[in-house]
Length: 476
Image: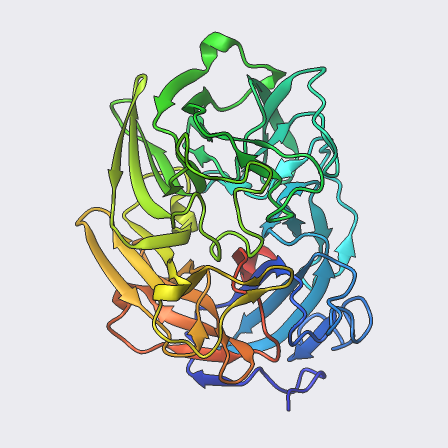
């Protein structure tokens, strides 16, 4: 039994590294299985163990009234001292900025919460919806924001009267808007992530277009295919005074059509080249049967659905002038790539990904992963991969039968100097016990050592989601 008065920690197998001092936050869809509603379970710290919001039973078998839920597990002094769950309309991502947790849907205005997931008023000064990836820059702690502005709102029709724009902005570490700029586009394409270097923003135009309301497929991704449309990379300098970027300032690079869901990392090279590592999917070819009224992503969501009848692979893109050289890093399928946050916007050596496989071709599992609205998914997470991008070496880890891993989050050790000197945190859905666990893995020995610790959570968390580790020195 887990107490709610601060007396007991979450049950844990193994030993938590003592330098893991902070909180793991997660966002995701409000799956109806195993929900306990908003509230606080386990040890104390900054609260009386009471409800963080909502009533018991919110998000239970009926799924609640919200699209998503946020989760927080605090690590302190070698223990996992609490678990908090809060229903939310933000189901895509969560991050810490300027003293608060900000959560986002696929596209929207951020929702703000305290570190105990108590709702707060958002005061970030945004009037345009932003995408769910807001890149933190290691140098200075600011965030780079972006979003497609096509005049649509809340799933309504596109209004091209004033044009279609990619909006870019930057917050400083305190949350003030430092700069903003806009790039005019021919059409609204699905852009879930961007590459951000110390000096540039890189975005990718895929053969997609916004769908009208009531389309099929993923409700969070209202974009369909445009077979035969060209692919483009756009490169713009960071900064801006709020005005439209002059056409001459945008570097356009022709690209064989593809679709990028996530960017592992991006950086400038001394000779002026730009390097990106991206999670890349194929796209339908002209004449290939495809439902143009359906979303490019199945309703199970990214990581649990094929895109363009393919699974994602990790590619290295090197941009020089108006040319891009593409290299596939490995043949294995990946999603949810992550890197050391200390290296954001700068060169890095190691990347960490969720390995996926077609469900029919995966090893036998105890259950098929399901999404709230879609039923069985057609892709299955099977393990984690660690890419040594300098030596072209790969290490792998899987949690074993009946367990489904999720996005790996790297936490550098207190005395760590390299971007594999630390820990990987991954939430694992354990069908064997009907709940989720947090696995703590030694990143430097992935696949060669047993987990350092396994924290047993009192609820079942979705495997399709993003998370963020927040060190305790940011909120204490």
